[in-house]
Length: 241
Ligand code: F6R
Picture (cartoon, rainbow, N blue to C red):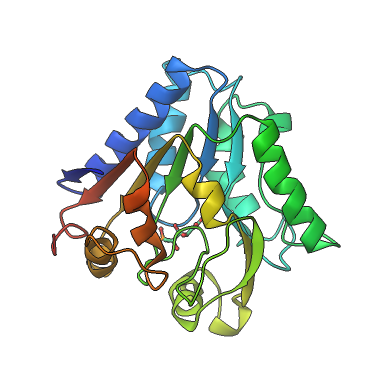
């Protein structure tokens, strides 16, 4: 595990964008796993700038997003589908046919999840997976529990996650209680993993994630078993290391 401590959010975002851009420059047909949330917004802003400057060409890239709320239409302003277009895809030259974001409104979720995993496999697997981390140690929406699932699946969000994500909705009641997420197997199969964390609310989860212990109570702790993980933290998120 490589850990970089950036002085602030800005520097974290810049470093992260640099790593994603290098991946795309080195392999034009790279397969990227992407996350949503507040943490990667700055990284996406920088990638958009790099695209505009002509420093990166996204045409050959295939993307798979980690997760989506269950029951939200892609056009819903709080859907992760909407987020990805607003922050990235509307502003770069990626091929829409190569963009994959889990649908939270598929009729048959079980088959849909299976097909999502098959598409990742058919694309050759993920070269670089970008992750944020929940204050409770979740990655994607793999929540702490007795066991973790390997493939894409529907998950009940914990109260802590519903609470954390309520800041994006008009009220807590509007936050979906379920989501569809890539499983731990899909994440762990990625060639390289880039996890970003910013702010003191993530310090505990980061400490537990790199503690030397692996537990389903802290899903991010499994990343210690992967051989190519890069953590980019700001000073607050790294405060307990
Ligand atoms: C989002 C995702 C989540 C977030 C995590 C942190 O696609 O997979 O695991 O990365 O909940 O969210 P923020 O960045 O909003 O603190």
